[in-house]
Length: 415
Image 1 (cartoon, rainbow, N blue to C red):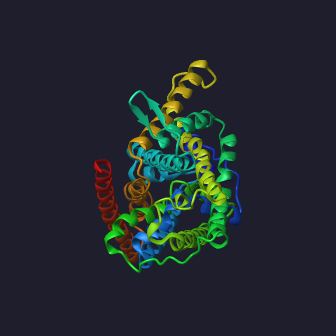
Image 2 (cartoon, rainbow, N blue to C red; image 1 turned 180 degrees about the vertical axis):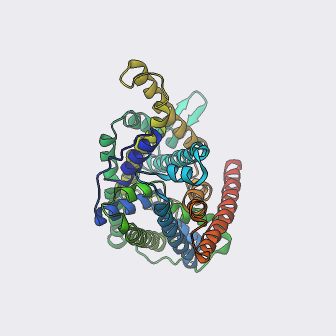
Image 3 (cartoon, rainbow, N blue to C red; image 1 turned 120 degrees about the horizontal axis):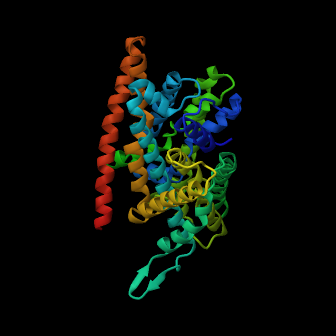
């Protein structure tokens, strides 16, 4: 059972106010697998670029966010009620009025994540088919936009699926894809002559604010982790699951960052998959893996948003009006995602923005705020101090990183 399936089912239950949690109980190893799956994301491809931009000492930011996010994931578990989710924690902390804004926040993050995946898919498709341009009179449409339109038509039927059990099978491809990409990169470096001889700077302080958003995004899986907690056979193992999962994910991120950074050095692109020479078969395999990876994400991320809106439809869910409205809604959501990706086609800036604007909020600031709000009268002073410090750091870094990302967006659009 993949993390996205857990998240979809957990949130759909919460958003439709169902009282029973029907997740299958998972063992320690199963929960660890789900947690690692939750943590790994599209930022996987960006870690070599972040390493090259920030330097070796910049990895201290990655370590810091790993520790902080592991702790904030733990305190989320402390705040959970039975069968709860991220939204129910917000409601427990701030009352029923908080439910809507926090639901919208989670939905915003899902949309933003899909925009990042869509940009990645378009960039890699354009690398595979660089001549796929379309001319309409004097207007020339570039390969990425033409190929994204074709990809939209292919993806569209997957978001029409309403059976969550069926949707969950789409996510199984994700972990296999990451493994194939890593093995192929190692083969390209060791067996095809690219090598690992490029140097990485010790530190580039001028870039640390920008890469902070990327590194924060690496661990912003907190909307899914409550479902991991509620699925455990023995919830007392949750802390051990988190520690092991964050350690594994951190090692994977660092290992892949080292792999890509030493292969391409100063030439490392925001998506390292675009660095491998396209004449190599290995390059085509990596590019196709990156292209196919998002196909497992759209239905899983859009389903909770669609289910929440569909629960307010005035028709029975078996009626023609309901089905037609559901198809239009899900098609509209997908169109919105693809349009945003075409308007803001800057992958590294989008990842940094998501990490700073929503990832920092969802994974760092809000968990500590919820914990302080719920346990403020019983927690020891030292623990309160730790959470106030996390709250301050998360707010400051999130605001600064968001502003820096917006400035970068403006510069990219003007240039």
